[in-house]
Length: 143
Image (cartoon, rainbow, N blue to C red; front, side, top):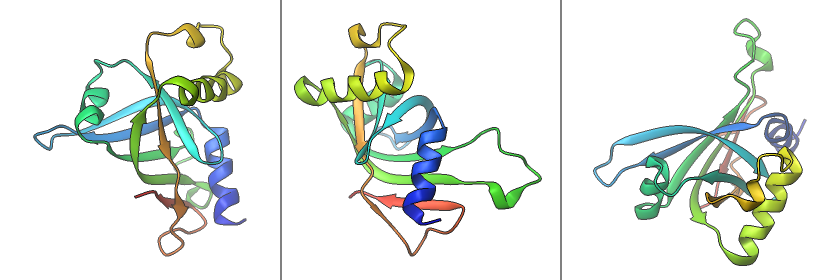
């Protein structure tokens, strides 16, 4: 499989990703969130007063990890994950509508996401870093 195929398989088969953010005084924060994706971005939904959202409001640098938490500990060869060094942005207007549609395509709209008061965010996938990636880990960098 190519790195692109591995990454798409990991992104498609998982519903959670971990956002790594930092506060203004450099305290790290890892937060699991539901996510959806398209070919250019990962999207998530968060409350503006959530600690990770407050961190992103002052420092948009973000590190994302996507992996299957149900993977077998004994089968190391089958473990796969995606890492993304990127920047986050809170969406509005047309960009928010795109995020809502991508999110609804993955999760449906049973819980009223389209009418949600939470904010939609996105982060660019960027380019695959082939110097770091292998058959188990795919690294993206998006400045």
